[in-house]
Image (cartoon, rainbow, N blue to C red; front, side, top):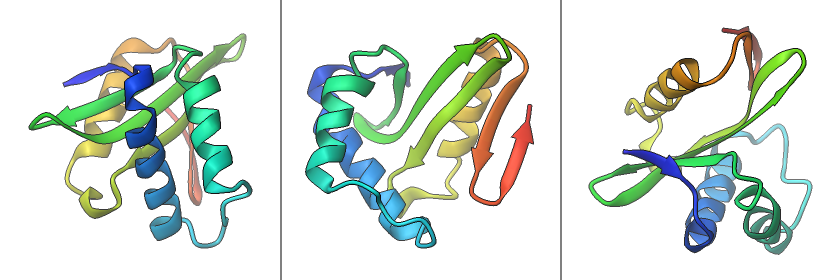
Amino acid sequence: MIRKAKPVDADTLAEIYIGSRNKHVELAPLAYTEDEIRSWIRDILIPGGTAELLEQDRSVVAMMATSEDNSGSWIDHLYVRADLTRNGCESILLAHAMRTLKRPTVLFFKRLDLLL
């Protein structure tokens, strides 16, 4: 199930974000401390209303945050729990974005610039 993130989800989303970045994006180390990231997710990202999460078996397994401007829609963040990558979570969130965001939709993904 995909749903909007709530304040109660902040710690879980921070764990997903930090864990995924630490495991899969070694070439771009975190620019902020873990506490700063937790504060940003709690105080800015979730209240901004664009953070969504994917739940499977009552557990949050992935997160996505989007934005829109005059040029289209952006997938700003898409992170999956580090131990669950390549299990289809990414595809579920991307399909959701394609259904709900206005076109064109842009995702910057590690080494690729994808225009969807």
